[in-house]
Amino acid sequence: MNLDHLRYFVALSHTENYTQTAKLLHITQPSLTKAIHSLEAELDIQLFKKTGRNVALTSAGKVFANDVESALLLLDKSVTNVKRFSTQKSPIRIASLRTLSIKWLPDMVQRFIQLNPTAAVQFHFNTDTGLSPDILQGLRDNKYDVAFCSKLDQFSDIEYFPVAKQTIVCITPMTHPLANRSSINLAETLAYPQITFSERSGLHSIMQNLFNDCGGQPISAYAVEEDQAIAGLVASGFGIAVVPNMSILQSMPVKIIPLSFPTWQRILYMATRKHYPSQPAMDEFTKFVREQSKTLSVNNI
Image: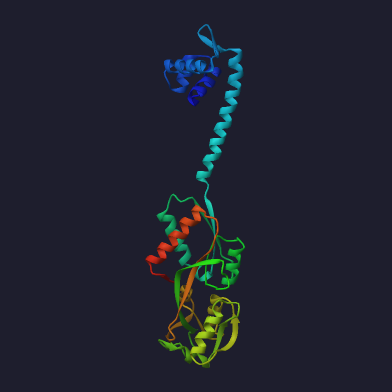
């Protein structure tokens, strides 16, 4: 049964005039007449009877018109509802270490949006996420869809992909005795009180190993979880520190001193759950991040 013929029939049932209906539908009157005759032939029943220059519904026509109009309204509503799915944006919940949230992550997401303008994606950034263990636990608990943080081996159900790297530097207050150095051996920092990473930090064990390689552990004046908080204490004169070379350091009153030994880089990762049901928007974004990271040979931040 032709859907257009049904719509013509409903329109004619309201106007009861072929000429007027044809104008409303923007078709010729013969086309309308042919459509109604075709519908009557298919049903094997008369739907209209002539009343002078107009037409009127037959008893059967009235019943059919009422049902068809209801059916068409329901069909149109259903089509509208279905079309909403094509315009709805799929949410992607992102968690990230603050060091990546300042510049690297916004730049990556903006690049994705610019290169994929038709992607139906709505990004949700979770900035108050804490340390890598908290972020990965939130990812495991389905609070986030993708995370950008350090790699922790105890989260075996998480898949990691390297996306960014940082070098390690020594930072000092601007008036510190080491502030005039252009580079420094890590062993030379052992004589000065330091702001160190607390045990909950993903960098704690890494720093311990680096200092062991240099002959000892630093004098810890304060132990702090986050690298940005450490930088703040150094800027205020509470001690020196060995931290990743974050972009925020450039805007702080600290001296940034490259390490001559050991040379080590911190790798940061995109983390996703293994064996997680495929989601087109998520798959598109994570594929983009992988491709961009490969092209840039792991981004420096």
